[in-house]
Image 1 (cartoon, rainbow, N blue to C red):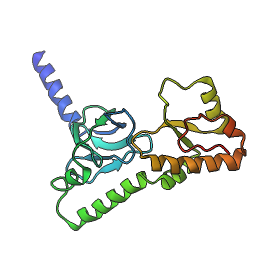
Image 2 (image 1 turned 180 degrees about the vertical axis):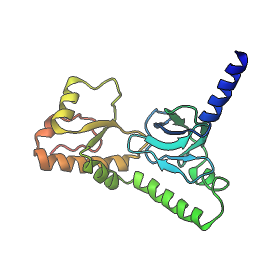
Image 3 (image 1 turned 90 degrees about the horizontal axis):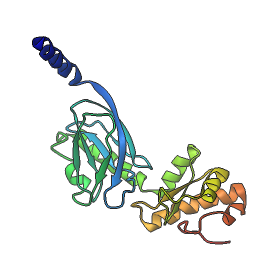
Length: 213
């Protein structure tokens, strides 16, 4: 009986090793808990990777026992072994992505240079308010950044506003004030065009860059 148990365990270990899975989760700032858009998630020593979306979410196909590498400019790199399908990561200030995501993870080839350029462009896009607004608008998602929102203080009026005007209140996160103002300006322009001035009477007063007309 013991031999059968050992054999079963051994076979299970063999089958599990290299099993293909889809790993997903969120990358957030350890300091304030806010999502990090544009963070890079790579399978260690490969070119298989992805960047987090507007909400800091990622989803990546890999195999069990692989190692995922998480990084973002100005933050410390984190490595996590894949032993489950949900992995959330908190990054903290430290070394930058350009240092850690070069060799030895990639071979020194011309292909590496192309990959590095693409990665920088992805990061730039993730921090471009106009690009993000257009991307979200295509999916009928409209965001308003506010300065004092937490996951616990959305009141009835806030929820009604979100539903009535098809918008989503969001915290300022790690974005700079200039980014927030430019993004909100695009959302305000959309609301003005679609709903005239009615939304101005109901919006939260701490919306970044809000100017009464």
